[in-house]
Image (cartoon, rainbow, N blue to C red; front, side, top):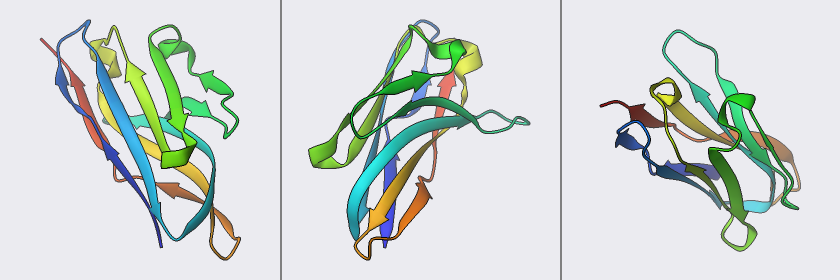
Length: 120
């Protein structure tokens, strides 16, 4: 069984920073693309940033220049460094990963979500 475990959310003032982590564990063979999504109350879940196994990245326009996604393939972990946070960044942040399990079967997995609140 494969699991994604997120950490690092919390309450921060506008202009502050947070770093989210997402670790994949369990019966996995290879972690391919990873990404961070967010969902605010009453809104759809949207892509924030994605990263391939090779390190290519893409970002939502609303976070370009403020957020940075990275990963450590040896640890099967992705990170989201969030700087210059704004109240509109408030949401539940979810990690997503495309993972081959030990049977060689690929599938998409989601973390449990971590709350990020930006407020003074």
